[in-house]
Amino acid sequence: MKKYEYILFDLDGTVTDSKPGIITCIKYALETKGIELPPDYILDKMVGPPFRVSMSEFLGLDMPVIEQLITLYRGKYEAGGWRDCRIYDGIVDVLAALKSSGKRLAIATSKPIKFTDLMIDGLGLRGYFDFVGGASCDASKESKARSEERRVGKECP
Image 1: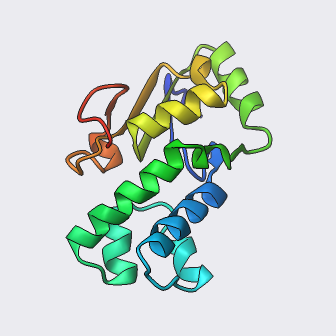
Image 2: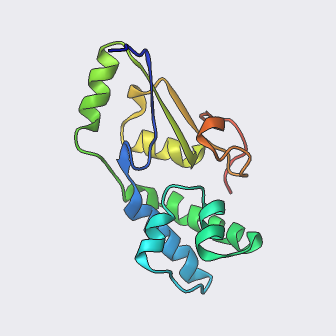
């Protein structure tokens, strides 16, 4: 068996179940703009990909409307929507075991770094990770491969 020194985790859907908060904030943004809510299975598909992609692909919206929705979503998420998540059972034990065995742990997510930091700190996970990378708010770094270290890049409105 190979021995790895570095272990990379995604945040949403891997370390945390953040779907309830994300869905609530998407619904809030759509309802605020008077856009009909899609079926639940569509909302479920919108959790994961960057919103500029999912709102275009699944809702057929144009970019000016999408940017307005993102602003509404982020306002609700920052105000507390992010708290409607939980750490998956057993994850803290896994992180602690890996960390105590000398592994270097990292988070790479397409979630904006501002909100990644809120979650990591708010859930008490910061001490497990040597690197926390997330997206910028301006879509220039929305992929995990291009994530950046915490607090670097354009701030979210």
